[in-house]
Length: 180
Length: 180
Image (cartoon, rainbow over all chains, first blue to last red; front, side, top):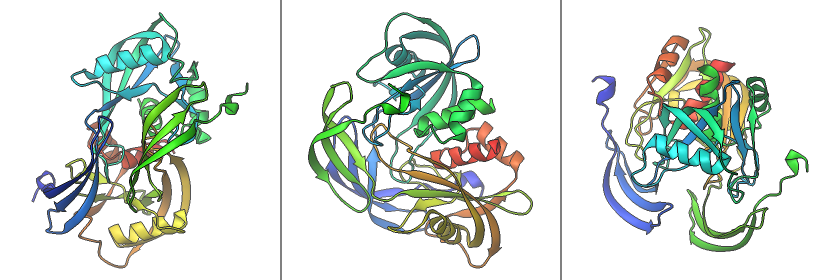
């Protein structure tokens, strides 16, 4: 059997616990490739994917935003990110999130990586995009963002060294950028 | 105002949608520091934290497991990881997960990073541990893991280059390891 021939787990039954545009919660009966059956697999189903946009200026600095987060009870520096609208392309979502959260136009979008942040129970998909900064054309959305500013590479390394970037989407994006 | 003085969002009200040992789903009324109120904030509450354990052998190779994932419909290579039991320490959880998923003993646990993989709606906490391999003392749990093997640094770089590591917990762990 070649590595890519592994079969996928199969759904035998589904109980709908909750449905909304934010998240669906299902209890599924799942048969795994080796025959093992889990009776109540709690699946968090996300209909919308999300994008994080690392925007670099001509000096090689990266735009960060400080976001008060209810789920984690934190307000640390993050890379701009958000859910994609239905039918929206990845570059369009990156452009929109950057404009909303930083007030900057942007260009030269490159899709760097796509992954599942919590594949043990959620099917949420995260896309990481790198792009170039344009200019500031408006303010940022103060209902979402508390502060926005540029960080240079040395400052970014220090944030990571101090475990200050606690948002996983931002952390992964920055680690990929430091590798690039 | 110093950067760390940002206030946290505050819960005004809560509707319980669902509770279980796997996940709780709440619809909270949340007031943000600037006064903005979200009426139905869907919070995915996880009572148990999780740990990923990057185990290195004397040759500098890293142990991977192939895990069929129902949520993402994938069966790609991952770093051993799993939920912590109530009251279990981070090193003990790393030791237990490695034994269960690879059959190896391990030692020299270092906590490398702690983060929130999806802080937009979930309070799940992920810990990343690096450690040293001991010896194989049993088989691995075939209900969870399809395959287990060592990868060298070059193979790991190639997996990442090809976007083959799609589990976020493993991706973050490996990027931190490549930086270390």
